[in-house]
Amino acid sequence: MSKKIITNREQRILTLILSFRFLNSKQIQQFLSHKDHRRINSWLKDLVERQYLERDFKIVFGTLTKPAVYSLSPKGRKYVRETYPLVSKKYLRRLREDKKRSKGFRIRCQIVADFYLILFVSQITEFPQTLETWLTEGIKYKPDQFLFFTPAFYENLEFSILPKLKSNAYCYIKRKDGITHTMIYVLDAYIPRLMLRYILKNIFTTLDEEYWEDEIISSLHFYFVCPNNMVIVYLRRLLSLFLERYYGEKPIIFHFATRNQLYRRQKEKSGEIGWIDVSSTD
Image (cartoon, rainbow, N blue to C red; front, side, top):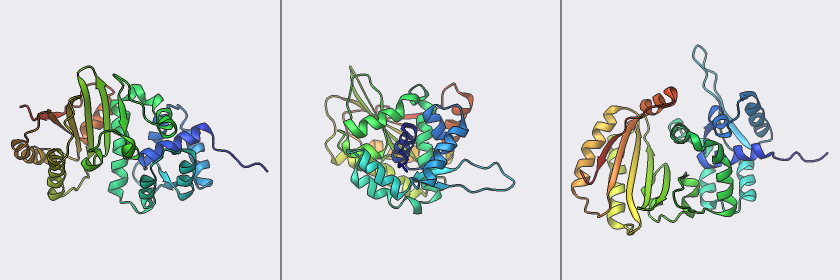
């Protein structure tokens, strides 16, 4: 009896989950641009039964049941390690503990995926194939090309301070006026104020202590997806104190919005999210 192979679609599912760590079935369907959810569930069921994926699904009686959430199993991690020569070994070691990750961590990973799905819908169909190319051929930078990365790719990127900034995702775009670097942070629902202060302090400490102001950089952007408006108010108050002591030549711009604003955009399929912007040049 021949050994059943991993199909191209199933391999793309594994690649997506490698990149985002935790994805639900609806997100996987969107990334694959597939109309039939039953076919998606069939691929996912096959990968779970063959022990490439872990499945987290809890039926909550009396409420609308949420879609199942998937992560890589030990066999799945072994498969991507053998299939993709450029995958970070350090990153794969971090994935070993994913079965023990908190609910907040799992939700954060899914919000990062939704950030991409909501804001960059025109590029969704190319995304899984792009991830496969990066993991086999390496990352190639082209003018006017928008690139979106998760921490799975940070070790292979040119922006040296990126690991120290500890963002949940990162965007890169190169235009004639220079390179724009964008960091995305997704904040937990019950994040303590001490942690909010630490996040901002770490950003400014890294910018002050590390060399990063290359002449081809046009600006740095920091996007914060917050659980509520109270967190935004507190962050803006803290931010004003840090910006008073910022003496960098390159402009840095902070953008704040709530999760509800993000998902309202998804529901309405148009319009602006309504980011609150704070710039070092103000």
